[in-house]
Image 1 (cartoon, rainbow, N blue to C red):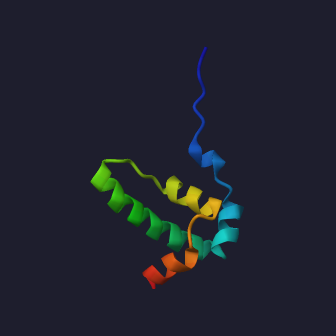
Image 2: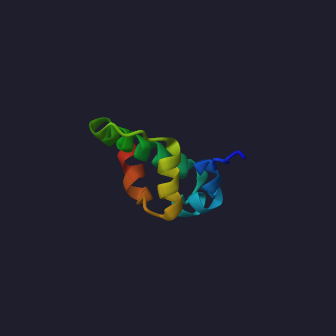
Length: 73
């Protein structure tokens, strides 16, 4: 009997992420900036962070996209 491991990436609804971000380009920019921020914090606590973590936050509407877009521009 084998156990099936479900990937977290299957839980991401890209259309919902895009709706929260306002556009695909903005989503990519904001998620990349959020991932950089998460990785800086993860180094201090020895945690493992993936791009999926940033996209899950975007999907849930937990990211203030304008704050992240301003940080990049």
